[in-house]
Image (spheres, rainbow, N blue to C red):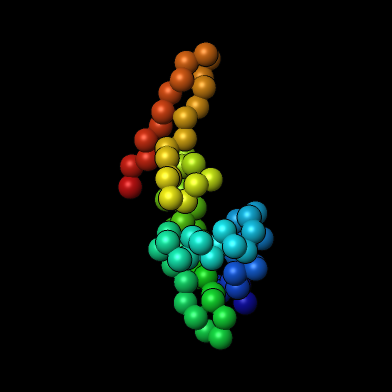
Length: 82
């Protein structure tokens, strides 16, 4: 059976970040979770978050920005459409 719930530790490994960052994402409402003993994140929620977070700079969760790319010496900003 496929895993559909991930612990904070498992979610951090899937998203290649640390556990405090996952908790901050949850606290800020950017990543939805449920408490079943410990906090859990559904697989579909991780997939939704990844689609939403694409082309965003999440290094400062209080100041999320669209990523800027340098293409052939030109600076271009790609805006995310939801």
